[in-house]
Amino acid sequence: MIEINLLPKELQIQGPRLALSKQLIMPAAAAVLLVCGMAAITFYQNNQIKELEGKIRIAQARAEQLQRDIDVVDGLVEIKQKITARIEAVKTLDQNRTAWVNVLEDLSTRLPEFLWLTALRETQAAAAGTPGAPASGDTTGMQAAFTPTVQVPAELEGYAYSLSGLANLIINLRKSGHFKDIDLKHAREVQLESHTAYSFALSCTLDYTGAAHGAPGVDTDGPAKLAQAAEPTGKRN
Image 1 (cartoon, rainbow, N blue to C red):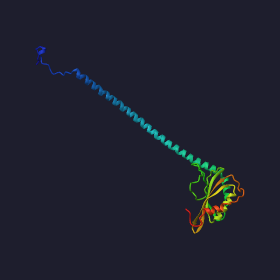
Image 2 (image 1 turned 30 degrees about the vertical axis):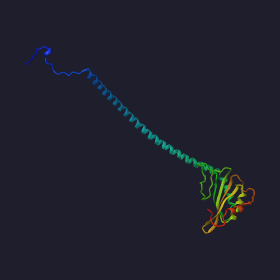
Image 3 (image 1 turned 45 degrees about the vertical axis):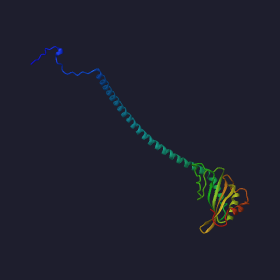
Image 4 (image 1 turned 90 degrees about the horizontal axis):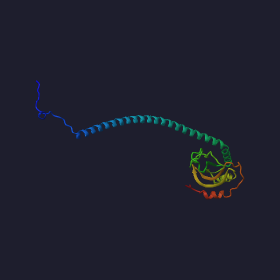
């Protein structure tokens, strides 16, 4: 059935309408645009972060590879330094071999009976890393640096069973061209097992170019200094 409304329009019943004012449309459009902009920015930043993370992973892998290469190079450099130091030590020892042979040969002919040395070393400050530099305070065995100059301060240490033997050693060394400015540092009475001996130390100037037999000399004050330095009884600390 067809119904026709013949009433004027102003009297007709209108259906429900959704009326939106301009005050609501503008803020809603702005909010939509803001959300879309934030979504776009977030998407772009996520892509940028993923790209940077990929570059970081590549850089880390490269850094690890370079670190391995650096470790290999450092190991090779250390090996080269050790080999070079050994080569230099051998060269220096070979260059100064004759000087040491002459010094020790001359010294061996001037040792009296019942007297022996425990140390022969240079006392000048040795440069760090110098091959053959003597260890400080080490008095076991014959010691000497393998880098002799013309004249260097040196020290001899040893034991003697009598003060007369020590006096003879000083006299003999003063006749040598290799040992100069000999001075008695101390002579201390010690007990070696069941025997009484004297521990002594001499300072001198070691001349590597000195003649095997220097000018003869007489030690006039050696016995007197020994009598003053050594205690007749007991140990001296």
